[in-house]
Length: 442
Image (cartoon, rainbow, N blue to C red; front, side, top):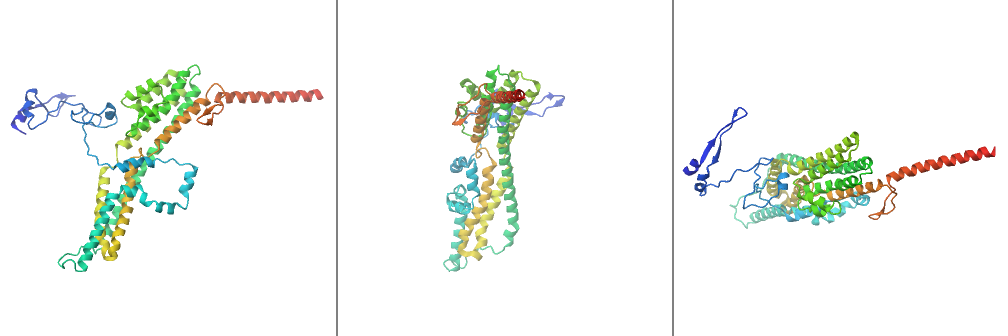
């Protein structure tokens, strides 16, 4: 630090809760100009919950309050190397199975079908760069050894063969353990995310059923609000966990225009939806026990929200990812040198095949580590919306016989009870008539 800088900084000490505060430093206003040559002085900045600055630098990209709420630090500049093809192809992995797809999935023809489609595989295209490297290196090793053995190169050129098998024998098990851990940990994250979204769907049905059963019929506006805002939670959560989603478009036809504006302007949109749902329950003035049951569903929503954010914001420890990648590339780099003595020119295709198999396992683990862009969340949230609207129709006050997206709407639940009562009364009347007829005959 220059002498001018040393004079500009002054220590500040103080007492907090009876303890001496660790000395910190600030810059005097008069010395700011002197520091511009070798030191950039920024004004004090507030800190986020992650301990990083929330103030946006003037020359950086713009960030909204929502970015801060979900843990994105505006000052954190991370260089990103993204494969556009792999990012786009993640949308194709959002599969939803029905009975026909399960039959195709189990079919014995899958072996031939999968082999014929290997060159159209997303794995092949996504791993093109490292595969080209391994195959190119193997070709170079084969060409070098061929040229040396045929006398094209002088005898003084060294032999690059690796004749010891212990090197790969001692390291293969470690590589296998790393790949197994990586894949299992990633699958656990994927499976946990899918289970939480399954719970969101189940709780959406449950809280709607409870609300329509307990909210008084003389408060139709609250019943209607509940049926709008419950599916709005899954839609807002999906947009919260994915980049590039248009929440206005997702909420059109579900919420009213002014309600959509409230969600869009909020900092943490899923939390905003939960707060509105809590207020609906409170305003309904329903008995204590149903209120507690519905609040329990909201708590489950909150738990799923927090669990999804944990998966999104916290990857598998980066040490594992980095070390696995380095280990594998070093291992594959040395592989052609070990294969050449026994396989000669077959080293080239064998190195490519082995690299594809090993890199493919690691690529699958990386692909499913962040599950929200490959899970069919739009299908799950769409199912929640359909189920809520059907429940709303079933809890109407009149028997319904119209259409609901091409499907017949069943008789409403109150009418079903009324029909059961009428059927019982009719049965009693018929029994009484039979008894009267029997008495008359005697």
